[in-house]
Image 1: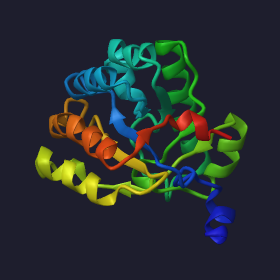
Image 2: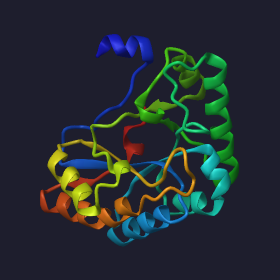
Image 3: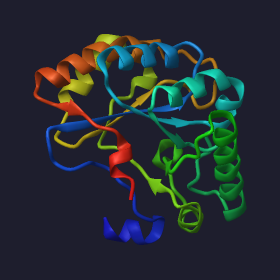
Image 4: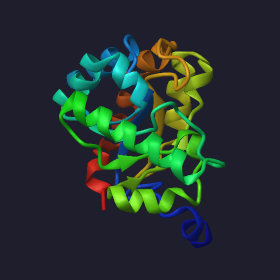
Length: 211
């Protein structure tokens, strides 16, 4: 792991090993799924982190602002959901900076966290992350909710993979399609929260883990 950190820079993959887990949502905002997810989170008083695609923020500014109004953490997820593994320094700079500026202009909050699309990082990313004073986040468990296996199956997969300190990767949007359907994830969320609480977990904000 240390070798990867030297090449790609450090990434937070898990929180402290306590009975606390962290819900994260990638690829939004989305005009249907994000409001539904926000409604559940508000009703259950659960914090979450949303790693946003810059072009989706441009398309759905009111929804991006609502995420911030609800006091959830917002992170940078590139402007066009670009796979960074083979991206050069200039492309990385453009993708991160444009997203940073778009989120700031739309929501009034400048992100302090970054997650690479698909987790693919480039050696050129390190210097830009340092310049922008970002903390990079990965995840402990993904459940492939993007395949839309059904709300109950998404719920079951999360329940099976919960661990102390787990950072759970879910999706409120489609990185390549601004109107992609993520309602199965939204529909699974109440059960995910209920299952975690029944197992003795509570929920934290990734903001607690920012360096």
